[in-house]
Image: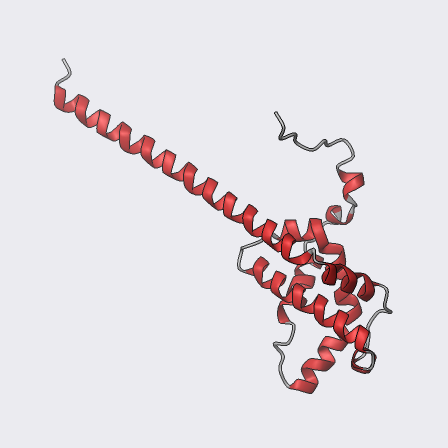
Length: 172
C-alpha cells in the first residue's frame, strides 16, 4: 500500500518537472520572439529611402574603387558612407547574435557582397591612411561571413528556391 508521503513526493516531483519543461519552452519562445523583433528592427532601419538610393548607386559603380575615386566625388562618398555604416551596424548585430545571419543573407546578402566588392579597396586605403585597422571592421566581417557560408544554395534567388511555397495566411 502506498502512503500519503510517497504520493505527495511524487506529486511534488511531477510539479517540478512540469514547471521546468514549461520554463524551458517559455525561454525558447522568448528568445525566438527577441530574434524576430531584432530582425524586424534591422530590416526597418535598413529600408530607408537613403539606404535604397545609396546601395543602388554603389552597386552601379565599378569594382574596387580607389580612395581617390570615392573621395573625389561627393555623391560616391556619401553613398559609400551610407552603405558602409549600415553594413557596419548590421555586421555587429549579426556578430552579437541579435540578428541571424540567415535573415541578413536572405534580405540583403547580395547587396552586402556587391558593396564590399566595390568598396573593399577604398576601405583598405582608408585604414592605411587613418592608421586605424578598425575602420569599417564589421562591414568587412559581415561580407566575409556571408561569403564563407560555404554552400551556394543561399545564392539561388528566392523566386526559384521558394517557387512552390505560399505565404502563411494570418486572416483566419
